[in-house]
Length: 315
Image (cartoon, rainbow, N blue to C red; front, top):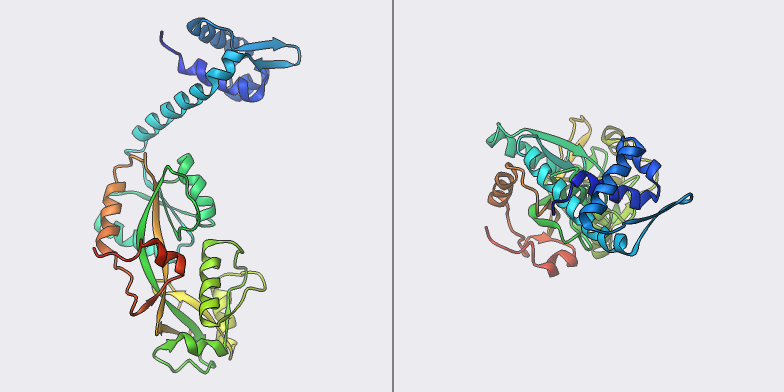
């Protein structure tokens, strides 16, 4: 017995809609063509899959039993064709923003692998990246990993990014070459529009609680240029920036490293374990080669990262 995948796909769509007409519209077929596919499938299986009535089409007992296997069969077929299509298309990489560290990681990869075509996608971080990896919309995501992931998603440490601050020249810390976290207790960190519950908001909440910092998230986020203008005029506010943040030049902004300890933002690389894009192994090797491990004598990470053990390793 050989199953027609087109008929199996039609079966799934009818089961979801419980109506041959609606399934035909979604499949862009005539209702007669859909009926013929189901008749062929039922003949191959030797059973009836649907109870047909004026109200719609309900699954028979055999139809209910066959449905999960049908879904698995179509999913495997889709993955097989996607793996072949993906061999020659650009590598789709999800980042939180094009000025952030993840984009710099991909840029340096492209410098050493110029023949690899890359499409950069910006999103809302881990929340959208998880689903996009599972459904194959993207190949790779860079984000801080928090909470449970789908078992199909692989991930590895990519980059521990030392944090700096950006302050205006009117700020008391503007003439420092370095600042300690303790020095920041007399100022306010501006993070307007910070998304509650996001992986980065959780990170800065942990940082603030551990070192007695104040973070102000009030107001809309009008973008980096607007924030720099606001910080430049302030005598008591600053903003955090990663070491690799591409900061637009501003005459009244100073960028200062944080020390004693240096908080590091943990960027991970995530991908689907069944992804067969030919550039993926090259990117994994590139990220692995450049990774530098957590140094407990100089760095700070949230307790969840320390307990995971992912960041304390030698390459």
